[in-house]
View 1 (cartoon, rainbow, N blue to C red):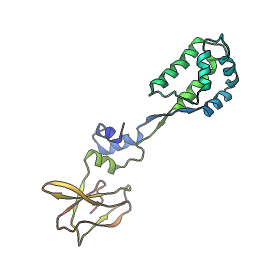
View 2: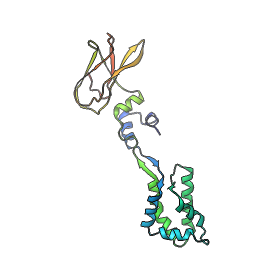
View 3: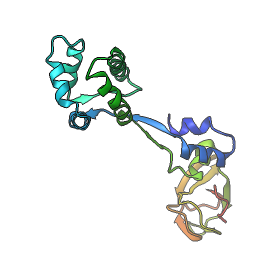
View 4: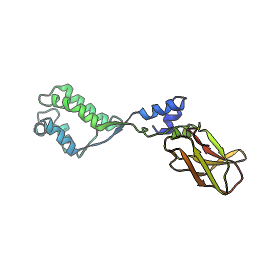
Length: 209
């Protein structure tokens, strides 16, 4: 899910939507490298026994184990059809109760699944300015330029953001410039097209005048 998709279906209150976005967890699938898997098997005291079983023609999972040990990367991603098939294979081995194998797989499975499906917070750095811009709820300060320059004064500190400047032509606003890294209370100035029209500056925190 993209940030835009999340915010356009989130709570109608911008500040609540911001909090929800920052806390939104998403699973990011990743392959497990052979070195990592071998290390896990060794830690579980199972690597050697797995190799022995992979060569045992009487073992019902000989082919699966041989293919497993020959892999360069392992897919146990829950958002992948291959990953789901591999997880089903683990469950099958666990369910069969194969001596020396099923218990080892049962112990390893949670670690393997966690490694292959890491949770992260994709929108943890989103700002209120981002939320309002995407949801089109941004407030604006109306200011006039002076000799091709536009000055804003912020009355308080706020999240670092880049307020964009718009001019209006026949009822349609179009971007003409922008401020960079507005954060601390104080004055900011930027060059804009020479014009006598009023400019509209994004003012999501209500601190610009």
